[in-house]
Every structure is written in structure tokens, then in C-alpha cells.
Length: 194
Image (cartoon, rainbow, N blue to C red; front, side, top):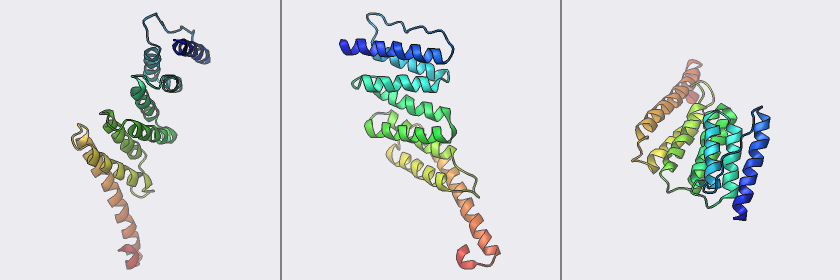
């Protein structure tokens, strides 16, 4: 009981601080006698994420994870953090989403959502892929993650998408290798071209 009260006050305090940061009037969540504080935190956080307030939403989700380690929303919160970084995009956001999704797979390997998390890891690398004549590091990672997805989750409804993205990734890698071989062939450096 004391732990729940403390969490409610942490939520209200955090909401008041963050509400002031964004120039909005603060309205504390309606925490009735029957409302579960972890549910309130999760609902508020998902609403923030839906409206593009990623930092605020992640803070609420992290508060939920740290305060309620036995919550039924723990797995959803962990996955939502990864999703928020993925949606936010950019190099830093995509790299952090990979870390969060891999954490989710480590902690919740038997949940159905772990296949989605593995697919998103592959997609984060896929989105960072360069053109064929540039660095292949992300393409190599994307290929490996799509193959891992296909091996671990052969019955996933995301399988057709994963196969298509894997083909596209392999085409980028093949075209890059062709361009390198062509470069050396034109310069008559046949050993390097082979």
C-alpha cells in the first residue's frame, strides 16, 4: 500500500514537472480508489508516445518498470520503449531501439511479441543501410538479423515481409560487391577483382 502511494506521488510529481516543461497546464491523472497506479502510468505513457512526446512517455514507462517489477504491464512497457525509439528515428534513435528490442527478447523470449521485437531489430538495421557503393556494415547486420528472425520464428505472420527485406538487403550487398570487383577489373587487377 505504501509502495503504491509512493508511486502515485512520484507520478503526480513527475507529471507536474514535465507538464511545466512543455508549457501546458498540468492535470494530474484521475487516480481513483480502484485505479491501479501501474495501469495509470502505462496509459499516460502510451498516450504521450502516441502524441509524439517520446521523452515524457519513456520516462513514465521507465518509472513503471523500476517501481512495479511485477506489473502485468512490464513487458508491454519494455516493448513500448523500443517502439518509441524506433518511431523517433534518426541514427541514435534506431541504435537505441535495437538495444531495447534485444533487451526485450532477452527478458521475454517466450512471448509472442518477441518475434515482433526481432523483426524490428532487423528493420532498424535495414533503415540505416547505405547505398551499394557505401559502407556495408548495416546491410550485413540487417541480413544477419532477418536470417535470425526467419530461423527463430518460421510461423510468424511477418515472415513474407522479412523475406522481402532480406532479398533487398542481399541485393544491396551483391551490387556493392559487383561494383568493387568491376573497379578492380577495369584497372586490370584481376586477383583483387576475383
